[in-house]
Image 1: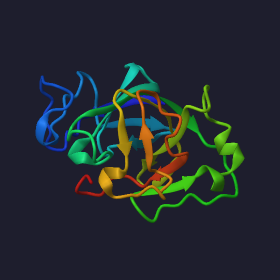
Image 2: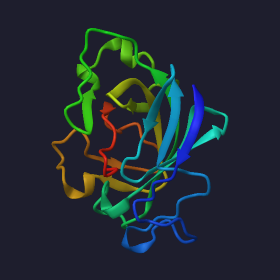
Image 3: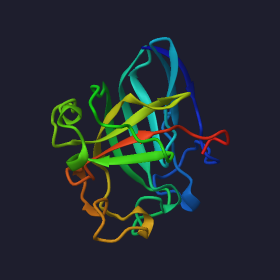
Length: 202
């Protein structure tokens, strides 16, 4: 795959100097981080992102196989007990292509989750080491919808907070957990197929 472009999508939150827990959902996006990446695979354009609060940059601008990322609590999207706009995670994203199986790739919604217990074992075997820390796969997409290529994400928390989707999920949800600083080994074990943003960019 070759780098085609980096398209910054700030969602109305300018990159500015300031604390990680800036008020009103504003975030301090580090230099060089983007909400959306575009690349070419097998002659077709493929996008990755944007999704709430995440910003990415390649470790090597000529190679999109490994990314660094930061995740913020924009508009309290992830945690109700931590400041709006606070930095939640730093981490690494490693590109992988899930092997073809009999499983159907869902594409009904923008984001279509499959939890590990329902996923083919062959998909789970593509996780990088340490496997107990790469717990979230997010797919890329092309003009037809989600594709099997995407990134395994390793989340390293920089703050303590309750991951409750901003209060939208309770303790009975597999997403809900108490986060402590360091690798988040309790992050939901989930594969998400991304259909891509609509024409309005959401």
